[in-house]
Image 1: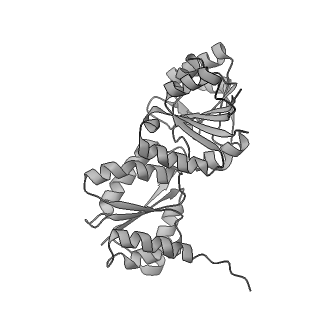
Image 2: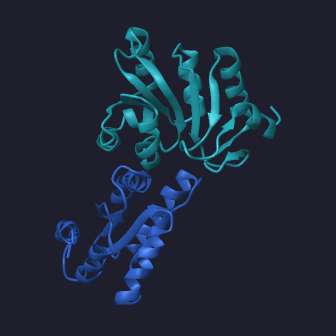
Length: 165
Length: 133
């Protein structure tokens, strides 16, 4: 049975930081990019496949519903998966549909109006804070904010204090 | 004349832009765009589209990025379709270095975009030598 060794939220999906540091330290044998927009765009799909394959890991790009279907079929077969979604909401969606993992790394979600900065690369809204809190409490996921393994790590509990959730 | 745009992680693009002009003097239709930590991806991608359009005088734009598959590259790729619709053609070269940028700047007035694209990629590769004494 496969497993998700590392789940990450990153609006940039696969990029240099992920390829150079995150992929190597994740212990994964495959990168699953779970993003509807990219999975439905053959051109961007090809670009991401080509880029992510340079990590030496197997690469799959799929829609959320496709990922959920594969999970229920065989828990991703033999793959040890680094699973990346673009948004916190997408990560919440797949967890609510039954995909399970132990850790969620929120690594990239840029500052938008109404959001509060947690680390340089991540800002969250109160709604996103509530969503993450719920994921941690109901699904026992250990959630933390960190862009790459060598940078500052903020645990969800400390982040929630900043936004009063 | 073909436009030249450089897009990279951090201030690398600004630095190589300045280094180029230090050698060949101030240039027209030459833009550089840095990606900063924590930048809003949509704002960054929009800026790329705008700067590429500004650099285009009708003969297309050669866009240099630092790494294949990284955010500057991915963001340029995301703009290709929209730029084509407005009539701007572009070609991308990865692994930007000063040698290829200088050659692109000096050749861009008398080559078409396709020829320049191929030629500059060749020059870039050839410009790297392992030197030992």
